Length: 195
Image 1 (cartoon, one colour):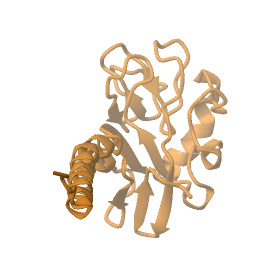
Image 2 (tube, one colour):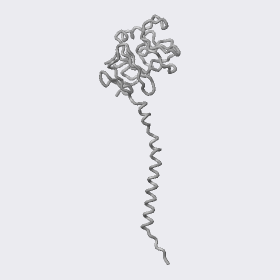
Image 3 (tube, one colour):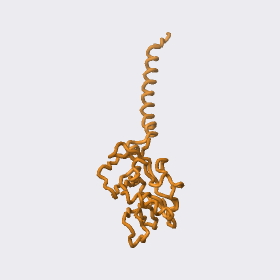
Image 4 (cartoon, one colour):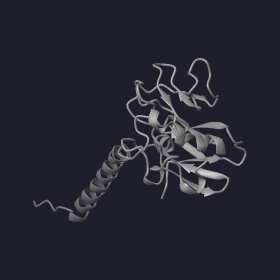
């Protein structure tokens, strides 16, 4: 007696097993492949931040967070901007040659030319990463008669002028970093993107 093999059943079972196996492979591979892409939280941590500067008064500073670091936005008065030239001899790097900053901030004010009064800087001391305090007061007793305003790091005594340039003879090795930024309009700037 000869046994007849039903090839159509065999073909169906082979295709069904292959399809189920393919679905299983896709099900296992999907989370693995997804792990190569950043999470929404990670994307948000590096995403640009919009800052409303419409209510930023002259002489005032506001803080925003970008990539987990403080970013200062300071609306400098005309007197503050004019004082920058008076202290260049006391600075380590007055021309900001050794600092991290975009091309458009490589000038005396370390700001975009169309809004030289607005300083945007990372609020992290370049010495050991403390956050300096904003000291716009002139000639305070603790900082000396030649203090024209700026930022003072209480951790180790580093001093920066109102453009974030570091004074000579302090622990900080370089000027405060300037992040990439651009203006979306007169009232809003975008920190983290400049293209």
